[in-house]
Amino acid sequence: MATKTATKPGGGQPEPFTPGVRRGEVRDYAFKLFQLKLEKGEPLTRADWVEAEKELVKDRQEAEA
Image (cartoon, rainbow, N blue to C red; front, top):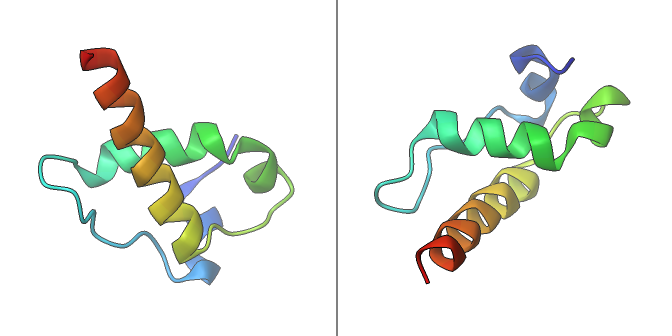
């Protein structure tokens, strides 16, 4: 199982840029989205965090439509 420490070498999780989105929500989504990468012991990069947030917002918008 992935832990928070698996993300430290990549600089850690940045603050969300989308209003109304919390860090914990992005973290949970990123851990699901990048499960294989984390299982290999690879840290998440800033680009990974941004992608996870964008995908989370996209999924929410699709669910509301």
